[in-house]
Length: 206
Image 1: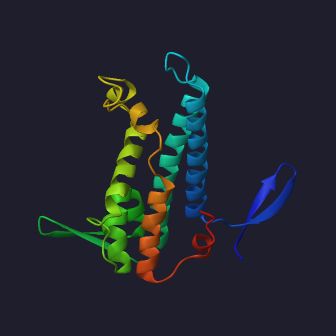
Image 2: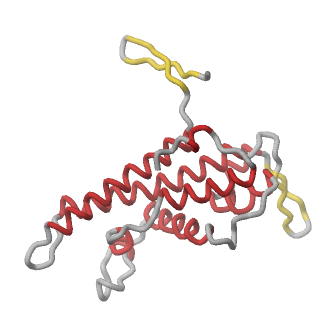
Image 3: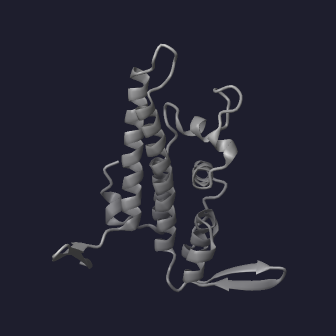
């Protein structure tokens, strides 16, 4: 069993090396559960003017944004994990082949490119792009980009609250859009394609 040595103050100890994808996926689930709890509390605490309590509404937003980010991070971690160390990705531009080894792939390619193009080529499976799993995945990564690179327009309510496109409208609703479930479904697609599920995936409690 692989182990990592840790210094804990004046003591040291070892832990089994965790799977990063599993940790990120669990964090996404944990934060979505917390966001849903905050939304439920909001529904019980609306004041006579329809104003939601700030502690719970802000908490719902914080936890949901974290759930989105961790779900996307889990997917990218999986892609990096499954791409073989010896794989070289070839892109042809203007008749010239450009080759990228794994280290360059991890640095130069975005997560949607890794999941939609690089990983399928690397392990010899059909790309999920264009299938029923891809559109929720694309929306999840687009939402992550809006959160990470938040623009002024995303911070404001503009127009009717029911149709406004601010990030707050996007993330504070009931039910909340899926996060970790989107990631889990795409992971399951790749594991089915290669015919092998890792132990941590088999033991997921959700």
